Length: 380
Image (cartoon, rainbow, N blue to C red; front, side, top):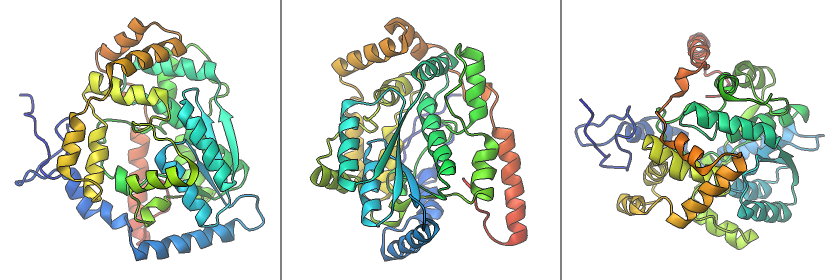
């Protein structure tokens, strides 16, 4: 029988996550995971300041004699933009990389320019081969999988890591944070770094050879970069009292940052994908995990989050404009784009992927950690 609808009594996650579980009080498994494990890695306090200071010291020592002591990506979103301001305050010397996948909004360009001008950082903008990106994006639409943002996300991180290796940079700064991203249903999306899945989808549905589009292999991502080269991902926002609203106001005041109005509004495709494709095709509203995270971190009240969820994801005129723009840029008709949205659902595991390799790696990692009595360095 179909599962009856239920929403968490503490946050706003619901049974659109098929793996969600509730206790006798109606509190969901995501909340319990936050309390029992995730919150232990969040330091919005004096201890966080001490840990961050220690890590910054390590980064500066490792970067002595080099042009840069760390590398970071800048999308123009609030998280990465605020991280850039804090990086300047911390006295670090990052190589800032922006990857242009062809979907930048005008506001994103403005915000990136203002942040770089204020911080005085060196910016490298890498423009992806649009012919390849377009073909890969259409292949993903034909595949029918949920995570249509893999094309941008994988291209972004692959470019960032390749630059880090080229410049011999050990530390990668990341704007990911527990305060606004602690909750996310694993069943909704597969990992964007799975190049096996990406290339399988492209072989099946693509028509253009991927000559310039860079990918990262399973071995590189989980073994070569962290274990052999000693690269480390650092998320500074987890070591400070990061508040989204306060960060946005700080950006507006400091650099004249312009608000997008929607999460990830810096990318036209991501806006369309999150606010239309996912909800209509799979029933996933990405506002729910974002708001749930902010409830758990004390940034918003549950009743306020519920009111936000009552607001439309798209205003009709905005949807009409964005749908036509996405279709035109991809070289397909609006009807063809809509057909991809309403076609029978497909899932990443229907195509070759890295799940078996990942399972074997985690088993080996767990065994080694038991022997050593300490946690192995690597990517989660």
